[in-house]
Length: 306
Length: 248
Image (tube, rainbow over all chains, first blue to last red; front, side, top):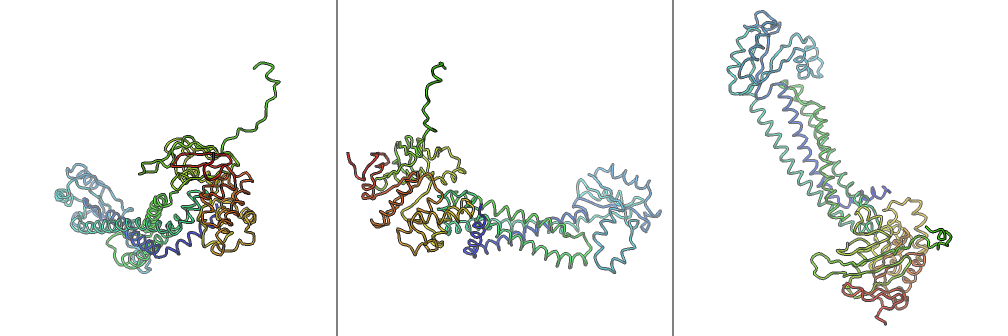
């Protein structure tokens, strides 16, 4: 197959159809940026749940060597104390399930959230070891409104330094995260519909501009793939430019907002990182390519009668 | 088998000859039309024949050609082209069939932004022929149609007759088995038409089957080739050395 023709036709098509191509690129760019933001928000919500606990969870922190609260008189929680706490969790009717977090796990999370690139900060925190962390139980309740029974049963026990119930604080945060996430995805869905329609228009215009060539190609027996390839390439180029711009915008957002401001200045939660950004860029790249290729294939069948 | 049979000479007739185009009781009606465009048409065209398809406008000539090209399909009956039954041909195999058919139209259908050579080469490029082959056969074909030295001209710099020669070169450059010409002289003056007919005759002499739809009585009468006349979708005449008007 002579691909030179396909490439030159793709170039000609993009130039001939430049306003349409720009419109398509912009629509794909904006919609995919929103989808990418939605994916990042989703990742952030998951990280927040891991860190704070979900809407249904309360956290029971156990004493460590530095604890000074009334129920930590013996310092580090002892094995019999732990067994007694576990006994309560196993038998309490309001407890649906629970997970135990070791000091090492707690230390790993703490490091991810607090240790930044800042040298002086690193020096200050270098004295912290896993032994300074607290062991904890992450308790899921059957009914989140019935938390007081569990709380009072546990908070008075020896070896428990605190029972954290962030549900009232977290509720609005999770609510707005969900609203933002679905808002972004809903707007993106509308824009993606517009993008699909624009792909259809682009193909129709391109097929009209090239109708003579297409007629001759069909008559002389050019294969269907060969006839559709310039059209596929045209929309694919537009999709890839759109994906590239959206990925660039997400990267700038990560660099300026997350790594520039939130990560160094705000340790209230574990923030999304480059790995999450890479995953969401992968997601929008796949979406962008599929959402242009599929309508292009449908439209070429319709308008080219190949 | 009896012993004596083995000693009988067996005549060598070569491989069985099939018509290159065969219509078997073909009827077809366009959607939304009550009258059929073709009605019970049965025709065989052998390899190497030159056939005129004549008849008034709307008699079914174009439908006949469209069926050969598999641009349309019959509602009833069977159409065989180059040994393939077009109704059973998967759509992805249609391009391969069309590579065996060259087509020429009344309005030439050249690409105005390409030179004469590029127009002819286009037919080979889009079916993936290598450039070395294209560089060899395009000048040969242009010479054959009488356009040597005009490869770099643009179509609008040529006369009507020359433009039709370019179209014929494009149709013939891949050496098709069948050449379909739909009113190829319809836009040309009589003298130029004679030149085009001579060219089609030369192509026919290379073994290519030529199927030409025309209204041009003078040409048909002069060439004395096979004439199939259609009227209202039916074959009303099939004469081996016919003329345009009906003759007994």
